[in-house]
Image (cartoon, rainbow, N blue to C red; front, side):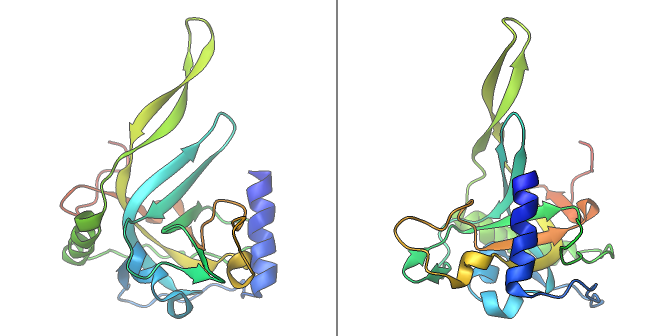
Length: 201
């Protein structure tokens, strides 16, 4: 995680964002991944709940989590480069980062369900690969693990490369334009109908 930590801290210094705690509104705005990506300037540095598919990038030594949605009508484009329709989830605060909202808002189920229905119209859950230790032969094998629907409440920040010339060679990192910084307790796994699943199911 050291490389990712340096990346995030550099992101905060580059964007010049405040480190102070943002106050939460009594009613949290719930949005889809595509809605956030379609209006980056409006939602950057704001506390919102984002509904989408959680994808994991897992290796033997590290893992990352992303909110994603397929077929966004207005993906993020900078200097001709089309960014992935993903938002990295950063669950856990570290020194030098903007603080995530610390409150635990109760997200209205009907609103979350409506947003999830929009996401599911274009997006299938699919699978990601995770390493597993095989006792026989003491080897590591990769297995397909289902992705999950989630609603994440946190602070949205942009990556430093978003305003730079990311050309044919890509933009480095995970090619993700935004990060949502959150507390682990504000990452809610969802059932197909938008209801929150038990923390340990």
